[in-house]
Amino acid sequence: MNPIYYFVMMLAPLIGGLGGIYMSKGDRSLLKIFMAFSGAYLFSVSVISLIPEIYEKIPGKIAGIGILAGFLIQLVIEQFSHGVEHGHIHEGKNNHLHQHDHSLPLGIFISLSFHSFLEGMPLGGIVFSDPKTFFTLLGGISLHEIPASFALMTVFRHQIGNPKKTLIWLFLYSIMAPAGALLAFNFKQMAFPASYMSVLMAVVVGFFLHISTTILFENSENHLYNKIKLLAIGVGVSLACIMQF
Image 1 (cartoon, rainbow, N blue to C red):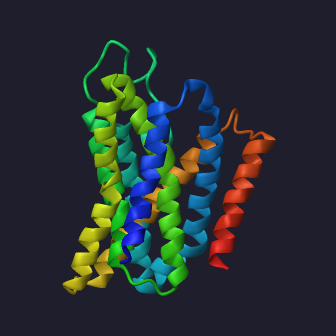
Image 2 (image 1 turned 90 degrees about the horizontal axis):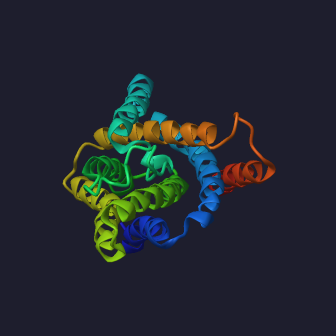
């Protein structure tokens, strides 16, 4: 796989994480708009591009079970991540992490790192029937990682209180998706059964469906979107269609 793709996978969480470390609270209203855009894009590429690709590679029932498994696994991951992967920020006294508690949120970090590692694997381990699918998946992972890393590093900055130390955790998180892609690429070189990687991709799509629908439904007030958020959703859907067609 071209080294630039590993760089893109690493760059996205770095951008989001740096925003979480250094951006002021007053600027975070933009995060919800970006999340609406990324959620719409994730859902759209899953339906338009990723799911058809999966059903081409493995039997329909196995593909469906894989997608369902990913959806359910994401529910379990959220018990440890507290929803950070779809932009939830917990740093106040009434949230999961309290101001008097300065212990590292390792459960959140490990669960998100595991999630990110698995997401990267299909990029390195699958030869896609349609080359455009690779780029839609790369774009989906990158756009999803920006708000996830933003929220994660906001939590770490609050807990650690030292931006320089927080940067170390950001770097560790940023290499998870590239590491997954690199491992899967090596598996592919060793003639690892392609069907296994396709099942894993189905699981990742299950992640995407859960995360994107959660973003779209929770990123609203009384399930009503204002015009800016509707515009962001429209742009996300349009971008997914343009990349595919």
